[in-house]
Image (cartoon, rainbow, N blue to C red):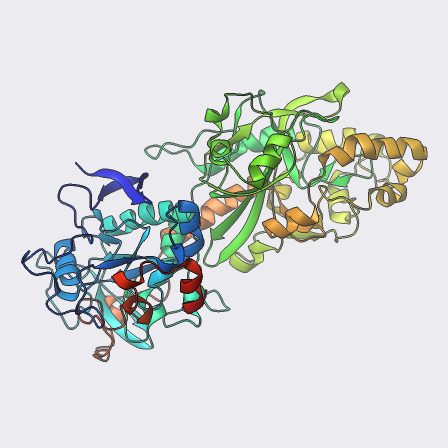
Length: 629
């Protein structure tokens, strides 16, 4: 019976969708060393170039050497190539590839959404010459050119137009079942293999519909037409729409993932989080209470019971973390995630979760990623209570830690600090005008912006504003003023509070701190500031952060509301380059532009021709020297 798992390095990974693998009854296997329509014949009857005397329809990945680990596979495979096969069914596709051409593919996605896996991803398929070594291949079952093959589907099939290599095609559309299956399959492969949710686009963010330079180095999802100029498949496959659908899942940091059956609107859930982060807390966005001069504070504080699971709000990778005993201001433990989001173009943002509880021995089952860090420098650093540099993929909603406590001993509270920031202002690139941007500069750690001060600086008794923000003013603003909703769409450029460096000089320039004795200021830095800092040169270089700490901080709850709306809009609308059938101009594309059923040229290359049995004992160094990457 088929399961909902794909096979990678001999292990099954659940994708939440029906998969029939080469190990399952009714599956299709590229490991069969003969034709399946005539088992007495070893070789394909119309072989692809270079495969005329080869019985095996696949090869080992040369750059893997003798290693078979997932860690090594993640280093070798950097892209997923999507094809349109020109066939009516997976059965037909397999016959063309295996029996006729001697070729192979990792996956076929049939019209009803059934996914067939023909090869373990550890092995190399023959599907796109030049990138076979570094890619996974997927064939989508689709007859293709509807102008040349009218009536291919007696039950009817919608048609759409697209323009590849400058030529327009009238093409049969993909089924909704295929689209759904691809989201499940590609979401899981992206996570397992560490492949970013990216596809080729121009400087304006529009999809590229022709070959791209240095295609072998590209990391992400590509079509066959990105590889070679004689192929037009996968035709009207909508890369931005798929990538948006994969990455659009949103979970709030203290909430369990929503049911797919009756999900609550994200905006409705967000209201509880706005309330949590604005009422009866000591710190707010975008200013915190370190003195009345008000430190820029990039996130919000959320109250919750200690040991409540803290979840990743978006899919991404844990790039840094610390798990150690409490410090002078409660828990100084944190998890930093990097997210590469597909919003018409790929943008990078980070989410930070601070004041996390130290998991007890035996409690790691609540935090799956800790169990996945089993060796290496990251494991050593975690065990020592030091900041660990990591690259651990996690899905939205996955538990990443537990709620701890924060604050000085006399005012310690059960809470987490949660923030979202980016090295560049991503909102302007994908949704101009949504975010109000305040530039606090990259030098001062304290807020002097008049727009922020004017909202909150309302002294008691009608006195004139004094440029300082008292606790009373903060409490009144976040409790009583409707203007606080304006902050939900605010992004602030500032220097992160987590960076070391000029703290003595900054405090000396702040009016309320300058009045304190030098010894008191030094003691404050030593006990309340230094233990919390983690943004070192090493962390910045590893994670892709600016070394100086200059970032754009978004209201984190407001960001989740915005992201969900924008991503869902992109995931449910077609790219502008894919048109309806009435946009068909009536001119057939040149016949040299083919899909995989029509021609096997360029599906293999020199790298594949020299990978027969006689080369299996070459060393990794030999292979790498012959085919550098």
